[in-house]
Image 1 (cartoon, rainbow, N blue to C red):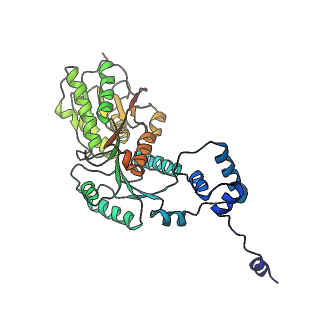
Image 2 (image 1 turned 45 degrees about the vertical axis):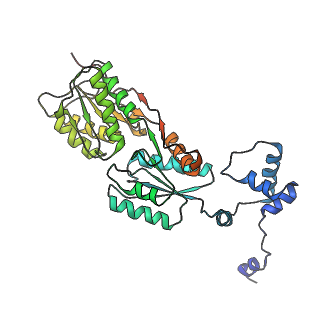
Length: 343
């Protein structure tokens, strides 16, 4: 007899069921179900610890397919981001996946770039896979999709950006923009420019509002030729940085509304022979891991993505507790890229 035949003749090991765990622990099946449901708060009672110990000894594993059929859901959450090559949206998805896993759910991701048509197709593709809800960081202020989801009663939460109507988990971007600009003002800068993001993104517009508020409070003039809209990427930061820094009268400081734009400005400054932190002070936004390890570490505004992600998952899974918006407070992380202006 060959090895395969011997294996086929072995008795199949029976998987332990919830009823087996309940019988061994001396409790009801409903009690076992409640204790082993990963979506519920973990009980630390002696009875709960005993149930978990018995489950481990019996080799019990939750049957996600059966439980999803009983609940009428699939235990999966759909996440839509513009792209995973963007550090912030990639990090956001990882945090959402962790937050979902803590609650017994599995997160799947789709990308759509900045195309409204691709966004719509991606959403329908996720819904075709029977996800229990959507978390989207793709919202555009001119985008009808969130309203369509509301009209169809599809559970969804917007993250990082908002349309002002759908449930949203965001950072306080206006405060963040204010903190970045106020930091430069407090260092003594008076000529401060702005590399803004796309005008369809609420986070970019709110960071710009914070910049403008800080400038107004300090009685400083906002020079139109030192302020611009752009895409959220390094190439745009370099292009817009070159336009501003090649002017005969240029600012002594710039606030870029995300770190990738700021990295583009670093490239432009290098081409202009400017030393960051001496000839030009620069502040970014999001505090992605790379920026603290640059040759001149970048001052940046940090919004804890783990809080935004956790709030988004909570809002999606607990609509009865849902407020229209949860806002996470940012903080400024000063580094070597900012200093007092040269005399």
